[in-house]
Amino acid sequence: MSGCALNEKEFFSCCQLLLQQSEHLRDGWSWEAVQGSEEGYLRKTVLRSVVADCCDAQKQKEAASVSPIFAHPIQELQQQERTQPVVATRFHSDGITGDGGDEDDAVCVLSEGSSHVLQYEYHILYSCSYSAPVLYFRAFTLEGRSLMLEDVWSSVHPNFRHCLQNSPLTAITQQEHPLLGQPFFMLHPCRTEEFMRPVLQEAQEQPRPVNYVLLWLSVVGPVVGLDVPLKYCTQLHPSSPSSSEPD
Image: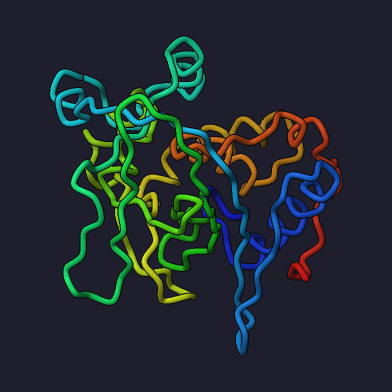
């Protein structure tokens, strides 16, 4: 690994190690190969219970005065998350919408204060442009209705949401999945090198084994409700992962 950049071969090696640990911990990660291509991605689905909340996320944004994401130490954001209530998801009250396009614009309809279970699907891909992993995700109700972008925003914990909304280049956006050609949400990777640099430098000074993808995921995952169990770090094997691609 040269500096803070991650090449594609190293990405596959880190993914292989994460898959081995996930299998041991039964954490649900799998490798999805793209038919007719050597490319692939990590995939995991998670069920999350949320509560409908009609509070306006925009008002919270205007009331906040917080620096862009990752400007604060990671530990500070995690401490704030533990001391504040879990944010609830806000849904549209006008029912299913549609503009005649090809995309499924069905929106979940909930009464205020009611609980609901959503299914989140997370994908980890490699970006050649940024030499870094990228987190793509989408969310559905159990009836198959997809969440819109503003609903995804309001499902983000307030501490992370304020930081993201004050830093548009690091924001959650909707993009076409580069391997599937389907609409997904993503966390923009433009500042990955910035927040990974101090972590990697400290690891090199120790020295201690580092799984770049695992460290990166422990930072960006909680922003969109994807927590990384601490056992991943305690079970990190000291030997370097092999360079072969995951099965």
